[in-house]
Amino acid sequence: MNSSERMSLYSMCHAKWGMKSQGLVLIEECGELVHAMSRYLNNRTGRLEDVIEECADVAIMIEQMSHTLDFESDLAKAIDKKCERLKKRLDPEAGDES
Image (cartoon, rainbow, N blue to C red):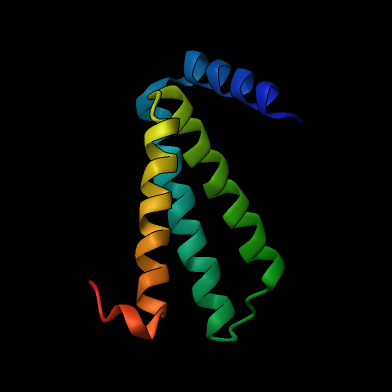
């Protein structure tokens, strides 16, 4: 499925279920990712496949929210800013930033 098809799908989801419902789905998916990662890291029957599936669910919901609320560009800028900050943290010459 290409990006245009996904955006159309997200618009249909918003039209059918509404922002509140989809926002709650995002919260639920984040919780499921936390649970899957915890089980994986603690070696309690956690499987990498479960982590991957939950990461995909969360990524879809974040992409859907950013499309529905029209903040895709702002999200991309925020991600770039956070990655630049992370890059500086990894560079011993840049000093320690919070």
